[in-house]
Image (cartoon, rainbow over all chains, first blue to last red; front, side):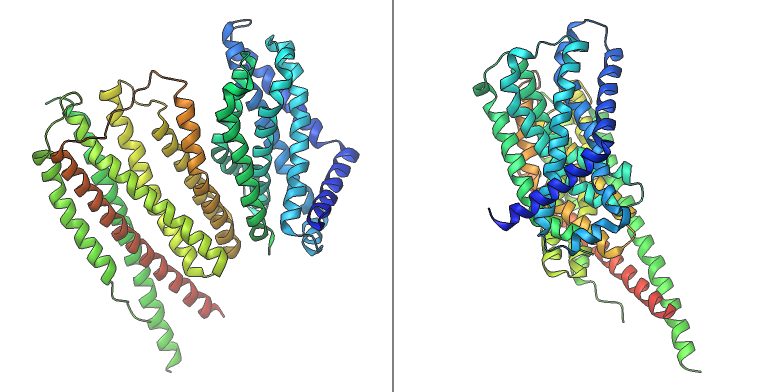
Length: 226
Length: 49
Length: 227
């Protein structure tokens, strides 16, 4: 395996280990996402058909907002004890650091998505089980795109005043195409359409992920340098 | 003369916005130049006792 | 340390001024009145011209941002920030005139049309650009992060465009006014307006850059005095 991937896997392993030992980030994210879904229920009449059409949107809003919560922690943990300096001093390529961090965030988001889906089934009464295998691809593209953009901006907003407020302001507008693709393909899949019907959206989601991962790999060096 | 009010509103908006931006730039520039000149004058006075 | 001659801003400023003097004649008198949309159609001349100026601004910001990250030349950052600012001005004008046109023609202030949505998202991205500018203290880091945002934001344009187009087709009730195949009188007026806004954009940009350069000089002089 090329050195680059070994380095990024080492970063990923470190992040997962931190997460496993503290279990604070994912817990907070999951609880927040749960709250978002719950609060959305009050916005609609119970058991009205609107809830079902809004389900894809609610799912992604819960995922994205809870994800933002987690992202702001992603680099904040590196600030303690000057860990970021340590990361910079390692011979690891900045791109590898980005990739490791991004994969860590993406995994957290995927776990989060897996936790939200049952909540959606229980509270919004949406039938997800038959569409589950076809949901994998939209969720994967959505979370990867979010993780790529979010990781870049979470590193950037680290040294700013109003860090927590700046991260969503940077991330959300940038994420519009990926979010549209994720929500629309999620909706189509829930409605029982085959994957071929949402090919356009999937291509868009895939291209978004590919381009942003590539751009961030190249640009991350400029974000990390001192 | 259909929709005259919309057209007038749009054009006034554009003209006023551009004019205001230009004026604010000129004002800023003038203030900066004034300060620069004062600073330079003060500097030359210090250097030539 | 002298006041530089402002040839370029002067030339572009004069051309823009002449253009702005002639454009109203072409728009209001020379070009005919569209039958269905009436006078509201006349908003189109300045609206679309502003959109072109906005794209010039944002693409210049993209180019200068890349150049900044490559050469680390402070002047590139200055040009990138200035073109983004003037681009944002025209972007705001597009967003403000868009609804004024949409209300009489489509019957609603805002429709989630592909072009409008794209402009709105671009506006948000570049507002974030200036948020970043005010909220990072270290000037070098500030320039670097903004360059990254300028590049990523501009790269996002085709995606937003494609996504909003695809999304819009799911909402077929929105019909966009057809602009292709303008009659010749309207075409003349339109091209003249585009050209005028082109001049106007560069006149404002050069002006903005000269302000920024003077400010830089002032800052460095102050730093020198403190030292």
